[in-house]
Image (tube, rainbow, N blue to C red; front, top):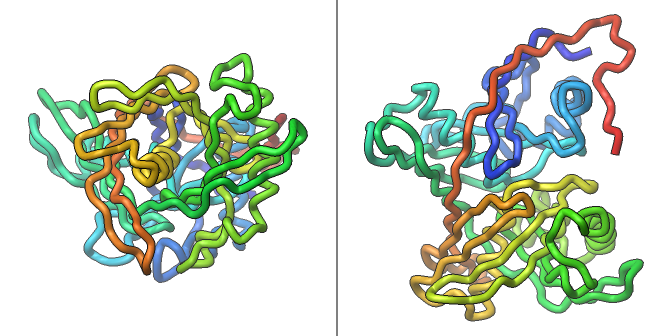
Amino acid sequence: MPPSPIATVDYHTGGEPFRIVADPPVPIPGATVAERRLRAVEDPDVQALRAVLCSEPRGHADMYGGFLVPPDDPGAHVGVLFWHKDGFSTACGHGTIALGVWAVDTGLFEAPDTGSVDVVIDVPSGRVTARVHREGGRAVAVDFVNVPSWVVAREVPVTTSRGEVAVTVAYGGAIYATLPARALGLSVTASDLGDLIALGREIRWALDDSEHAVHPDDPRLTGIYGTIWFDDLGDTGGQVHQRTVAVFADGAVDRSPCGSGTCARLAVLADAGRLPAGTVLRHDSIVGSTFTGTVLGTVDVDGRRAVLPQVTGMAYRTGEHVFTVDPHDPLVPGFVLR
């Protein structure tokens, strides 16, 4: 039975929710954020807390959030464990953007009325930055500067219920399978969402135990996190324009263009030569929200060519909650009806 009450502050980034628990009411020990994630996965009390906030009737199948924890060292301002209905993820761009706005909104960090401030955050995949831009005393945009991202493999054959398809696997803080929706006769639209979810799950599970799902340096980051579907909308005037939807975990849908997924797509496009200097990726979501992505530079990561990605978006506060858990409630910690 999770402790009660549980205070949260909720945001959305491009339509995707992010529920912030600044003071988790159960201990989550560990020397680093990555270690705390592994402890959280194994701790029934932390899992119960995640489930009660994520599941119905307090959440829903596509709910997302984070527990704030201490950073790895004084070089970062805060640490965070990202969670969803199926567990704890290694990275989350939309959550990082929301945390940046939250940190400034709450006065945790001093910020100029007009100007920028960097909020440095330790996440399970490494150290990232939310660069919050303000005008007239309010946040207007956040640059999510992510960990190095790279292409894992191209033209990986996957057999689905609609036939075989070739996917590209890429890392952007989490490992994704990416492919055009038209490859299976679909488009990134609400009318095709049911098929995108079902086939996205098939692709993820087909690859999850393969060699392409193995992180080369850190086994804690191993596994296919999701499937990214995209529609190409044209390359014009220094801009690559795509519409996208990420089906992550076990069939959850990202309403935003997906921050870490956008980083994976930047790696793929840069590797294909479609992002020369000065080119911007306009990444639209299935609900019409937009992130923009750019490559800040390239680095060598143990012999792999990786890009340094930046994704720009904005988060907005939707409310504050104080959740209670009735010890006599037979539906605690909750349920997911999909």
